[in-house]
Length: 630
Image (cartoon, rainbow, N blue to C red; front, side, top):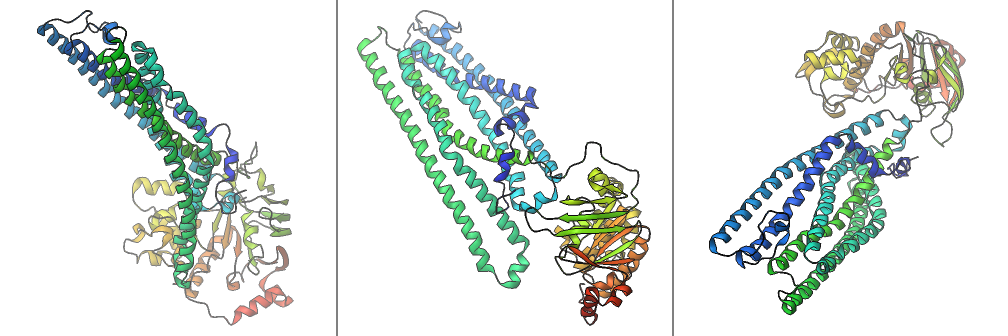
């Protein structure tokens, strides 16, 4: 179940395992690239430590001419002993310059390799996650889309997945930076002065513990923020989609208040989290400042008191302060990384919660896949309700023969559309069964069944694209032919002609290549309806469901469509749901429904003769003047 706002709080319960571990598993698909990126990133960090060693060696050996060995001498890169004479110092300086140049060269090459490999891996993970999440979303059952808002789904597919890509892109590299830098500096400082190294490294575990505590503080806040922004996106998506309603009823102030209320909630939650973040980071800076002051005092005091008898050399003392900045900069960044981690974890819970959502309707282990569907439909004592609501259908039984046209009449909410949606198994019955060709629809492979059923709804959905693309969508081979050849297939033209759509298509600026806009916004309601009918015709189904399919066309257009439909459904089973009863008066049988039950059935003439509900509906419409949709 979704939360009351149609968000994604509940899907977090679907996550199998730790969400961030699941994210890493996606990255491990590209382990050679990832491993190479990690290794080169570590080399980059080690190479960044070399210049400070060179500065220390230059001060002690070249400038002061001392004999302090230092780390570069210990590893054999510099000669031992005091450096006497100008020529020897210049020669040593040349050697230090060469070492620095090599270090910078290595650093530049490995930095390019690590960033390219790690960032490209993050991009691949983003692509895979979005593809998998979208594909999984497509295969979820219809009840999921009823209980979850579109804006919330888009928030998961876009902002949440983008946030995970950003985390892998930046914070994963930051983790490598912290581990490599702290390890390298710890080893180097310890080799120079264990006492001062202890002081320098003391804040490290404290920062780690504080960051872990920070995660527990900030986690519920970021979960709430993600849900709030999801609801805000849903509100904005709903309002933009219904802008014509807002304008027609002059509800600008009302909708502004609703958006402002959710924006204020988002603002307040962000400010609360921001206050906590800023206080945490300020504490980290204070902690590192204490360590800096302690090293300055203790190290300086040792140099004054001990001189050359055991104290750090001048260059080594400078080395400590050069490394302190490199040590504490990534450590202070841990707090920010912890913040980013918690944000990413919140997003990962939603993404992998979506991927863990199971379809309530699935194929059986051994699905029925006949070569063809004849179109016989049987509803046997069907009862159905949407979730925990009152039943929409109550004990409906009806047998439909192949090629028979059945008209459905009744008031809005009688259950007509719901009954038709059980045929392609968009929903499963609560009790009873629906059979197609004598086989329970739950035994079919869903897509195999649905390929034999075409639906034209009251408000047909058209995709942003050309007229030809929207019609060709009804047949996979025709759609492929259109996309590969670039020319309009003859099957598209024939389907448009059969749906009485060719008349207006030829008058469009670019004919079949005319862009119709999002949801077909550039077309009238009647034109959109005819394209949807053409799309269904191209599908060549055994069963056609027309749900108020001619409700948005004028009388003349309706007559043309009815003539075409009469020819097209001659050899097909047709379920025609109609508010305008004139569209079903020639049906083989008419079924009248009320409150989820069949109350009348028979031909048009028979039902008029019984003088029941159908006759009353027919009489109420007899004097109505149809309005033009075009």
